[in-house]
Each structure stands twice: as C-alpha cells, then as structure tokens.
Image 1 (cartoon, rainbow, N blue to C red):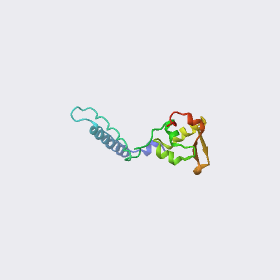
Image 2: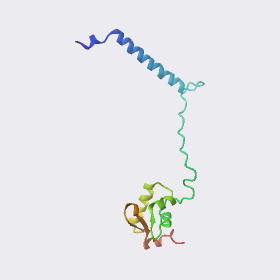
Image 3: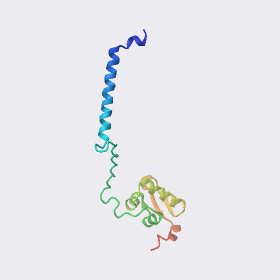
Image 4: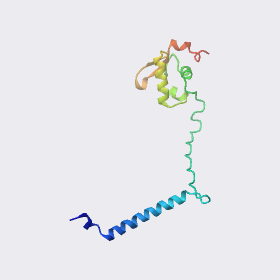
Amino acid sequence: MDIAEDITAEHLHAKADEYEEVARRYRAAAVALEDPETGQRKPARGRRKAQKASGATAGKLALNEGNILKVVTPEGVKRASIDERIRGTEAQILRRLKHLEGMGMLKRTGERRTTRWHRTDAAQDHPSVKD
C-alpha cells in the first residue's frame, strides 16, 4: 500500500480549509495590532511594574558593609534580625556577611537556625562603627 493511495482529495480539501481558518485568525490578530489611522503596528504595551508592599522597605538601611556592621553587635545577631533591618534579598545579605567574615570583621557562631553573626574587634576600626 502506497502513502499516496491513503491520501484522498477530500482529505486534502479538509486540510486546506483548516489551514485557511488558521490563516484567517492570524490575519484578524494582525489587524487588531494595527493602528486604524496609520495602518502601522501599535507599540507593545509595556509591562506593569510590580507594586511593592506598602512599607516593605521603609525604614530599612541600604545594603552596604557599613550598615551591616552597624546592625551586627559583638554579642551576636540572628540572620533574620539582619534581614529585617537591611534592604536587600536574603542572598545579597548573606553574600555581604560572608565577605565581611572573610575580611575578619564578622564571626559566625552556631549552625543553621542557631547561627549568630558577631562583630569582631577588627570591625571597630571601620568608620561606620564609630559613633
């Protein structure tokens, strides 16, 4: 049995009608995107900016080493407390904490939920720590 024998003229006409319907839909969509006065394509609508939760960042300090050193005390501070007071994502804040730890300005104690960040004596010389 040859594939040409399975395809009938009726089948081909049905497929052509189906494709014509799809083409008609595309043409209608294209016309809807055109400006009726100029015939030119309308500019795409811009994405709406996500609205921030009211007060989500109000009163928070900017994400920088000085502000992190102001928030962290020699007695130790939990990570959640730092996140509440510094503006930035958890990943951004953690990266800065680890950087300061590598510089010797912060020390980490505990594991997982009991982790606390402590300001070291080396951080006392940083200009932001001096009152």
